[in-house]
Amino acid sequence: MPDYPTRTARLLSRIHELGAISEDATGATVTRTFGTPAFLKGRDLVQGWFEAAGLETRLDGIGNLRGRLRSQRPGAKTFVLASHIDTVVNAGKYDGPLGVLMGLDLVESIIQQRLELPFNLELIAFSDEEGVRFHTTYLGSKVVTGAFEPALLQKTDANGITLAQAIAEMGGNAATLAADALPPAEWLGYFELHIEQGPVLWESGVPVALVTDIAGQQRVELTWLGMAGHAGTVPMDMRQDALAAAAEFVLATEAFALRHGHGLVATVGQLRLVHAASNIIPGQVVHSLDLRSPDADQLAAAYTDLQAQAEAIAARRGVGLTWQLVQATAPVQCDHELNRLLGQAIAASGYEVDGLVSGAGHDAVPASAVAPATMAFIRCYKGISHNPLENVEAADVAAALEVAERFLLELKNAHE
Ligand code: HGY
Ligand code: MN
Ligand code: MN
Image (cartoon, rainbow, N blue to C red):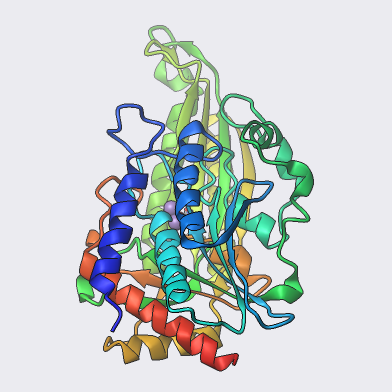
């Protein structure tokens, strides 16, 4: 009987070793965004583990770490196990790395058991899922799935560095991105293990669940252009205060989403005053809007409605508004056949089979465009994520490992 608790202890010690690498030199917070020295140091550590496991390892043009376990079967297709190793700012240690390191454990177990698979296994640590630095998510998985748009190379970060420059500086190669894609005909499927990042499993006490759908998302950048002025001299009824306009929109957005119950979520996570000072009436404010729903029609209707509300606020306040869609991904349904096998593995491990909708986006979204894709969620502490309080219980990780290993064996049997 595989010793899941021991394997879990080792992968969690790796999580903590990786989690100690951060852009924050004090180590007080975990931040490893695309292409930074901390990101590269963390990737080097994971690459060492891939190589020690015996995986054929390489870095592709966008900086994904790719480990391959070849099948002896001629013409075998490739099944991808993956997640990401980039993080948000002030992140937890598990969002992304847990899926990569659980995948590595599964591959190590296959190698140690000398299991011959009828398909190649490719384990991937994606270099940018969160999109923190360039405000476009899935850069790594877009390359592997052939969905990378070359125009993205001109995107700039907060310091004006283009993605093309960042790739070159990290030792990547923008010229190989198209060739780095796994050809559509080669894909057998995609599976990602990830913390739930929500409260359902925490509340139910169930350690692992399959994912039925992944919500669609739209990310917008709004710029409010008012009139900067002297805070002491301009009467209140003569102002074109860009921040007051933005604030009215933020509260209107919250009220709108609250009226839609759990089907729709809307978040303003970033807001910046241009030329800010306490004695200047804000003249220019730039902020984000993150809209999500598993229902494509609801997402589209919310987008249209909120844009109209923003324009009405701008008109009433005599403030200019630019509304720029930065990124849009449609809702995704996970593959039914993979979920049938995954459900069997969950039941065989002695757990009730739950199916969850993911409000968070994942690399399974681009993967689902080229291959059957699904995910398994692991119970996490109070559902907290994108927060240093992110945590898991070893017993839940061990349970998810057992389920994932059964799932891979079911997949093996299904393709013998
Ligand atoms: O924002 C998300 O859904 C994910 O964390 N990238
Ligand atoms: Mn993630
Ligand atoms: Mn995340």
